[in-house]
Amino acid sequence: MNEYPQQYYVYSPAQYQAMQWQGTVGTLMGVVMLIAMGAWALSLVKKAFKGEEVKFPL
Image 1 (cartoon, rainbow, N blue to C red):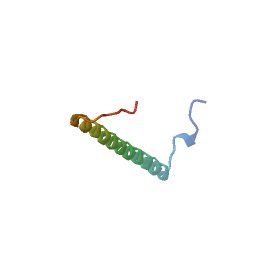
Image 2: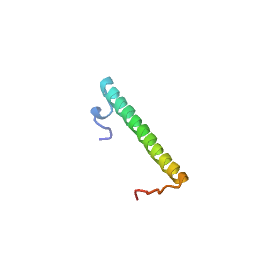
Image 3: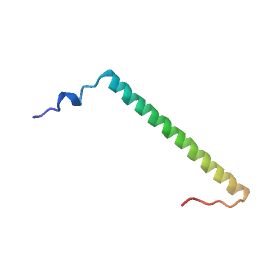
Image 4: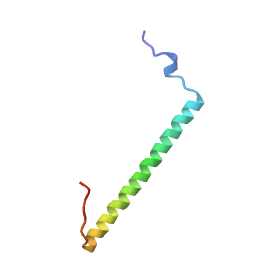
């Protein structure tokens, strides 16, 4: 048998839409995390320039 069963490569429009939403939500979560980490890093840099003690979480 050299082919996948029919169910593996036939998707309905509803399944494509669900996959599109999962991708969109995942991308938005990634962008939000990137912004949050950037803001956190910027706040540490500002503290360091002011001469305050900066503690890294590691």
